[in-house]
Length: 122
Image (cartoon, rainbow, N blue to C red; front, side, top):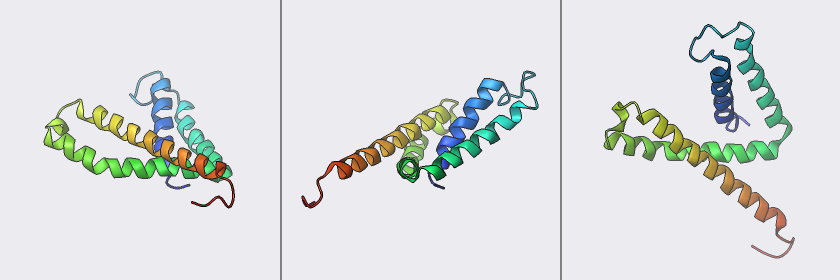
């Protein structure tokens, strides 16, 4: 559960911050809006605690993103993108793709293992 929560929690907090204007410290950010990311985090953690299967899938995505982080940063640095303003969004996109691939592979593996007939062998 602890591996599954950070990417989803960060994405939810960012989306809520953008929608309410609190991420850019705009005037439209109300004091009540500052509680919304915390409420979303509680909802996400509760959902992950209620569904260990979902937590396992999302945890696999987090592991895939962590594995992709080292080569992603290395390639971005080698190409000179670390100092450019486009470097952050490129790395974020790379990590999002790696996370989705990890979740997809874990879901495929879970689906294949649940549809295999008992006693049919490996």
